[in-house]
Length: 227
Image 1: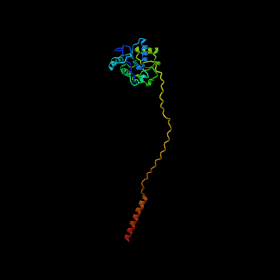
Image 2: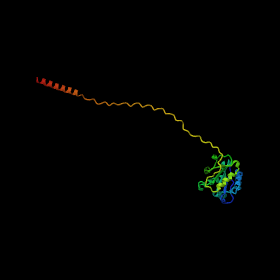
Image 3: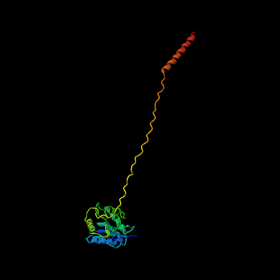
Image 4: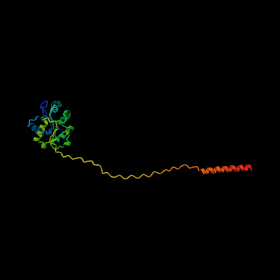
């Protein structure tokens, strides 16, 4: 089902200190209660149920108001979980404006009016960097109005509205498997001992025997020659 958003247009520029209220068309009654509660305390709210007549009309009125408003209040619900809607252009333009907003200054104020969990909300990443609040039954409380007035007072802090009542399930902790002892290393076989064999020594006794034999043979030969 396509979800559209009624344009907030009360002329061109946004009044100083105005709250821009962005919502899906199906949430118009909840948005009206929020606008009435804020206006009852003298706050300026950009809220009008008339739809834009053209893209040029949206840019000239709604786009300019988003770029000039003091707070951008995005009403999140099951309706804003749908794929399409004019509010998506509003949310994206507000997210782009945060690049020009001083760090820590309040500008984005996401408000959930049903049980839609924040972690599953289809919203720009910039919306997840601020604190969200939940209005039970889409009924604005006195505390809620007081907090919005505080944010409009110029405090350079992120929104401090009451956090959403969402029960988150912590991701299971990753643990390492128990370490087991490694088997002992097999002993290395002893390296074979290499014994160097010295070269055989020539016996001096054998030399003398050979010489003596030669002398005797020579003497014998000389003797027979003389006889």
